[in-house]
Image (tube, rainbow, N blue to C red; front, side, top):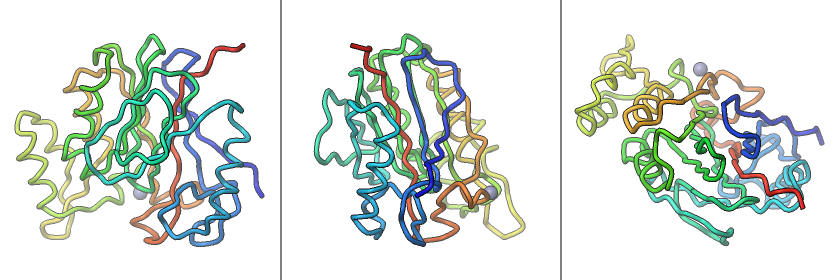
Length: 253
Ligand SMILES: [Zn+2]
């Protein structure tokens, strides 16, 4: 098995905030899940998944506890004090050190959030459906910290270079967010009639800024372009998922 290659967000948060994104490198899953798949629901063997998650745990603090989600492209956000067996939601918030809040993606946008004090974190699974439905608004609203005390980082998602959507998607966004005039610039018309290239990063930045979160970084990936590092649902259909995770480091005993 290869050593996992993880991506560490480049953002301005206190040292006690730890965050990572897994890539395809590492693990033992066979194609089309090769090789560091982190998701249960995609058809990969449960032995491979178990082994991959153990390999991930082995490179993170031993006492770290993981909260995985059953994601449904919705807007439910759950605040957790301790990990639970099965949560159906698309966002997690905690103030408790030592709990890794995890989301799984392969094109959708993982949005990492932490306050500048380093005692509250959140993560959201933000694809176009979730963002249209208001997952970022719900997450920010449910956090105790005020938006101007938050820092955000946008993890790997499909870039606008590869994310063609129909007119109906653009219209739904513009109808739902009439006050956000910058939103129309997140959709660029293509040569194909009625089609637009959608920029998930720009949509997220626009929404976060509007909600009062000014410190937003990241967003310079394309999961579709970078086949070596990332799974991409739109590119490959049946494929694995990367894990995005964030935790507050537990104080050293
Ligand atoms: Zn691309």
